[in-house]
Amino acid sequence: MGLLEQKAAAVVEALSRVELLAPSAVAARARDVWAQCFTLERLALKRAVLRSAISKLEANWCPRNAERCQDSHHASAFVAWELLVDWGRLEDEERWENLDFLQYVLQDSRALDSEHVEQVLGAANCVTWWSEMIGGWVRDPLLERFRAVRSNYVDVAYRSLFE
Image (cartoon, rainbow, N blue to C red; front, side, top):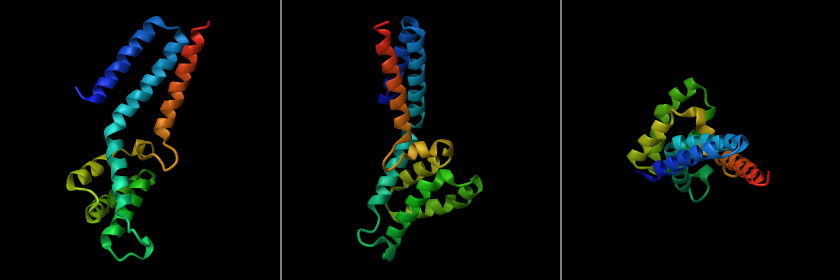
């Protein structure tokens, strides 16, 4: 059993105990935490693949002036990065039209090995959660949502101790 499965099993086990023993308000917040954990678990691998790809592509940008760089690998790394960041905002038709181009620029950038390219292309079909998987430079919506739900649970659980 992998680490992710162990953590998921621990959350389910804890939830069952909370639902059995805790007041209804605490149990409701615990179910919210479980739902966020389930979402994180479901997206964890694709999220890791995409965030790693973006980091590697950024590392392969031109170390000098990217706008005037003549190295096609540097340009491909930037174009691939741009496509990945904006992939979730493209219309379905645009995504399918750009899928081969995405594969080309990922390979031409030489930032990722062929297995990583295939994993990124596999994740490219999960556009519903794209912005959550990609995250942001300053904010990470998926983790922010989890922290907010977890904080609500902790507050309700703490208050229930004094009621």
